[in-house]
Image (tube, rainbow, N blue to C red; front, side, top):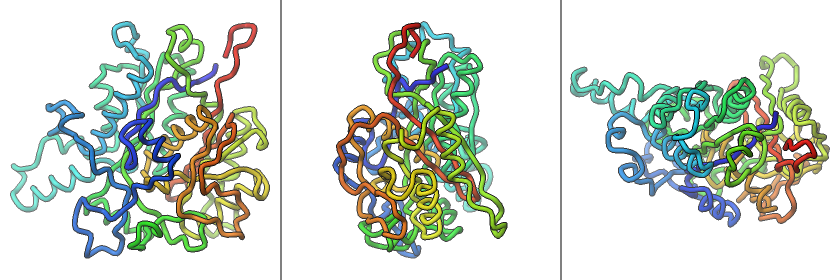
Length: 410
């Protein structure tokens, strides 16, 4: 069977809907700046990709506001937009065959911090009962399923930055097992003191105060990443089922996927990213030459960039494929980053353009063709990469919709 994307919903620092986000990406408009959610003067890192104009009261039902963290509100808004984009009609859908699979890196940091402060300062009677689930990494799946009365196969994936791609793959598995439609992706938000402390703990954040120099993957001056918030939700369907219900559009297909895990540090075995790429290409029945662009993970630390560039050269050859990191305009969004890159890849296919990597110049030693300004060229297939802390590697191939065969199959 062929799995296609029929709806997308986006909420990102540089755009609260699909077309706003895409216009910003194509225009090279970055939303990375000095973090304003709290006072960062005492912290060694101060830049983030922050969503500043999100109106939760206008976007989320009032009854859900007391029980949801910021990341869940993002997920609800993106999910609703994706379902609307796919022209999902709950009155005719078999809701027992419509599922939800999301990813999250950690859960509701902001909600949890507030309730812990209430516990410390006022006592347990002042802790919200909703704390029991609002912090939980699986809550987005639950809240979306309840909101839309979706009773099909559901789940949650936790594999750090790689999780969003893994969630899409899990949804494809559920479709192959008989689900009718799947809503999948990820959103994250951890721009509060507790979340910021967690980011700082592993020493991977950029300490640069200048937003123009803070997040520069593959650059000789790369010194760490900038966190962001938001993400994307996507509707996946079997191509034949999508045709039967006359969907407004098909953005493309999930042609291939693979995941690997890096070996133990010090084992002298190579990282697993190149293997994940090759397996994803094999799953898609494509060769490296068939890929028109790679949406790289872009961790922006020297070791991680070197390993990713080496994997790209291993699979595609030096300068063998255009490489872009549009998350340089949003920051790294945790589990939301992979799905947002998938949306960008699908729109690249639609519009025959490759969005740029801003404010980075690839170090010559990496031997990659880093796209630093909008590049116009046909895109039929794209490879999206995501890597999680501790060794997670995920790769997804998205491709243009296949022409209809004589047998009527996409």
